[in-house]
Length: 436
Image (cartoon, rainbow, N blue to C red; front, side):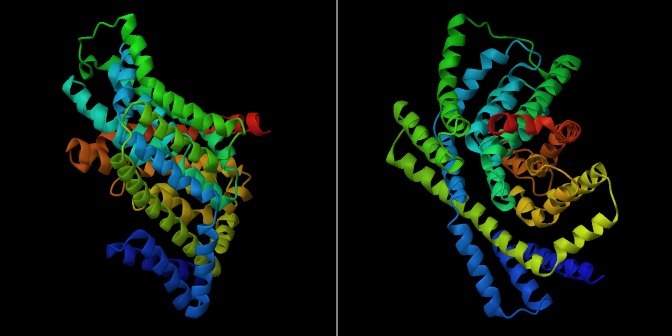
């Protein structure tokens, strides 16, 4: 009962600060300080000492340096014409399958996710091109927005993933193994999305315009040339990681250099571009790292209050089978997705969920992929679904319209989670192949 009261009071503090419109990282720091001061009775000097130690430890973390570098690489791609080239390059190859150019949303987000690591950046970059093009050509608006909302979340799953880096740091797991574990599940979700689009197009041909452009061999050659910059960048980043040439942090720096070189070769590099991309990366990186550090502070605070251990003991006393625990955790994460963004979900829940998962016998690498999939769902659930906000701004539609359009793809993510639970090798085969 004491633990329930303490947890309820901590949650009340969090809801109070978030409800007042306080920034997330400040809210987390205030919750941690309030919980330690009022609920644990700790003096302020001791609280300050704990906070200082956490800030120093995370600020000097080499693994954390990958986050701003990957974000900067994504900003460079976002502000050049690579996204436009991506649509042009994919169009000839998907124009002959059911659903036609609607697949550019799914495949474009999949390819861009392999060099971005950010779900909102993936959604915005691909969406600003495809929504306009598909709308002008007469494709169904709801299916277009829904596929973009779902596929945009692949930026969290397909490496390099910022959320996976955060999980790897907090869970003390190999980021390289996590990156490898995300590849096949990401391709599985891509296949589910494309399969759904093909099925809808077959059942309702009116969703897709009847006219088809005539393509020559030269069109396909030009398409390959348009795809070349993104494919080269993806090969450099992921190839350096999986061959062991570079760590994820080093690969992020290599990716930035390669992105700048591509911008120079395509004659788009300028001081204005560098300034804008640096400022964009600085803003996003500051937000992510601030949330990560203050959430670690709050995790330490609830650890002092014994909430994770007591909750873990309470759930363990229920003697749930592993699948039962997975159902409970899935409902828990779906609930968090209504109120929090992906990074906040990971850093706030991990002290509770990871010990439970390990106690139930789940592989920590597999659990990381499962957790990222659950976070992906948070990107398309109102009222705090970041992808929904991005698409609302791009399309001018209401948030409820975009959320309804994304609902089928949310269900497909649930199917993906079920497949991952039944066949854990989908996530574990590739890291075991590369790293033993």
